[in-house]
Image (cartoon, rainbow, N blue to C red; front, side, top):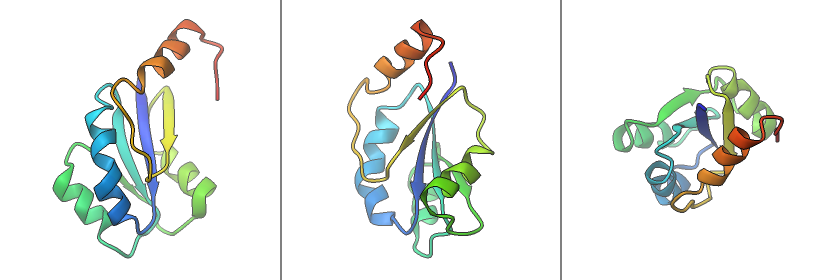
Length: 110
């Protein structure tokens, strides 16, 4: 199953510096995206320079939380979307139970 880990960001360069490393390191079975809500800081430049495997979606405006994700998800092709905040640290195998649930119980939705 194709899974996308999507992090909504707005002026969160410091949070991305702190928490994006664990998401990238422990999400090898997924495509990782940063959906940027028209940040004025160097968030996008930081991600591009430091994490070239992370895909960036740049929203044209700060759409807030729900619309920011909705705008970004239109451009992402995946069967499963893991929407995570920019201030979480994940651990090894964090996606494994999620993928197992979706594979073993195809009627599952969140």
